[in-house]
Image (cartoon, rainbow, N blue to C red; front, side, top):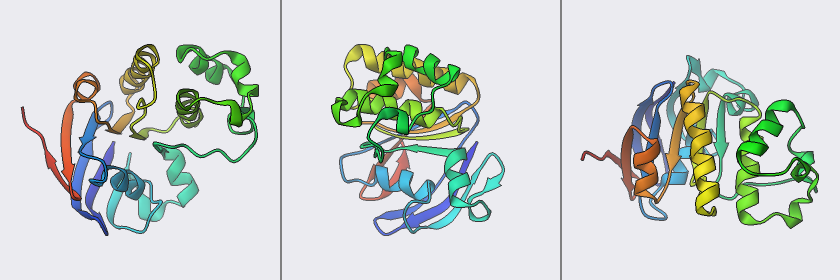
Length: 198
C-alpha cells in the first residue's frame, strides 16, 4: 500500500493519493505536465515536502537506500553504470524466470550495455527492479519503446505483480493500457492532479 499526503515541490501542486495492495493507478497527462515529478518525489530523488508511507513504513524515518528497495522506481530512461548487464543484475532462478517471461535469452545477462536496444534496455531495467521484490512500483512509461508482443509480456508481468499484492503507480500516454491495467486513472496538467471519472 502506498499513501501520499500533501506531496509537493516546485512544479507540482499538493497531491494526496492512496494505492491499496494489488491496485494499479494510472497517471496521465501531456509531456511536461509533472508525471515524472510525482514519481521522483515519491521515490525521494528530488527535494520535496509531504508525507509518504509504504506498507506502514514512513519515508521520513527510512534510510533512502532502504526506501528505494521497498518503493522501486523505473525511470523512462533507465541509467546503467557498469559495462555489462550482469554488472547490474545478479543471475538467479527468479531473474531467469523474469527473462523468459519478457522473451529475453539467458545470455542477455552477459550482453554489453552498449549493444542494448531501447526496448531491451526497458525490459532489462524492469527485471533489475523486480529482482529486489519491491512492494510498491513507480513505473514511468514502462512500455513506451516496446512492440506489441513485448508490451503484452510486460503487462502480463505487471498483472502478476498486482495479483501478488504489489501496488503500482504507472505513468502512460496510452489510455487503453491504463484501462487494461489500472483500477483508477488520474490526470495531471501543469502540476495539478485530478481524478478522471468515466
